[in-house]
Each structure stands twice: as structure tokens, then as C-alpha cells.
Length: 243
Image (cartoon, rainbow, N blue to C red; front, top):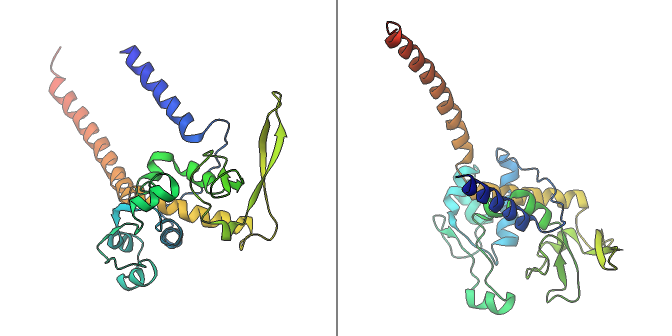
């Protein structure tokens, strides 16, 4: 039993290292799935910048509309750019064969990406692209080194270039990322808010019922507390004459 618990602990620890990458600090993502306005903005960014290559095939447009307080007309006008219907799953139109040819492998489905990687990972990843002319798309990423994904948000953020420091072993290591002045449409603060909204939507997408689950959970705990008190009083009543 002790060996099983130790193995589980080690597996969890290693998984966390793999998720964040060696030596990479993950910034805390300002996630708040109760912020409907943020989720609505995140949905807009998601369909404009992510759904082109990635799918969220376990989610439906109709469920997003209901949860985010959007009418069917608004979703069909601003969130659906293909011949998909309101009750269809959120799928990309990119063929897997084309994606494999262009990127080396098909981009992963993003429905559960926030559960798999974590909000902090996604928030830091989307803010960590930098120029690297050795890579196919001219960019690399500090969080996921040699990522095969282009920087799809570059028009908003602009381009970042690495600032290197020399380590004790004589290797050049990236110390920070520096924004190329005038290369983006948004200020760094505004871009961070865009990424926060996008990540917030992906956190919602990974578990649309999480707010409802938490509300029900409170009532379940209260019910168990009351039931526990009644059970204890009943036990005392049954055993009061037993010596």
C-alpha cells in the first residue's frame, strides 16, 4: 500500500514537471468562469483565432449560447463562420491530412485542454512566443520549446525577441522576452486581458457545468452535515440504555 501511494505521488509530481516545462515560471491566470462578459469575449477570440485549426468537438454552439446568455441569432452571426448549424459541434474545417502536411501533426482538440494543461500553462504559453528564424514559422515558445504552432495572435501582441544571458556552463539561456516596439495593435496590458478572456473561455469549455456543480455541492455538504447530526443523535438514542 505504501509503495502504491509513493508511486502515485511520484507520478503526479513528474506530470506537473512535464506540464510546465523545465525552468519555466507559469504566471497565474486570472480565471473567473462566473464573469459572463469575459466568457463572451473569450468565445469571440476562440472562434476567430483558434477554431480555424483546432476543434472543440465535444462542445456545441447551442450550449455555449445558453451558458453565456447569447441569443441564437448572435451566435449564428458572430460565432459561426461556416455552414455549421447552431446545434452542431464546434469543429474546424481544416482537414487532418492538410494539418499534418502543414504542421507535422494535426492540431489537438481544445475542448479539454484547460483540464489537461491547466489555466496557468495556457495563459503563460500564449504570451511566450518569440522570434526564432530556425523554426518553420519563424517563432518559438518558452513554455513549449520547438512548438509547431505559429503565433496566431501576433497582430494583437506584436513580435517578441529573446533577451539572452550566459549560464555558468557557457550556454545562452533566455532571460526575458522583449516586445518589438510598434509591432502589435494592443498594449501589453490589453493583450494580457485578451489572453485572460481566451483562457477563461477554455476553462469554461473544459467543464461547462462547473458553476452549477459548485452550487449543488454546497447544498450537498449542508445536507450531509444535517444528516450527520441526525444520525449522531439517533445513535445516542439507540445506545443510551446499553451499558
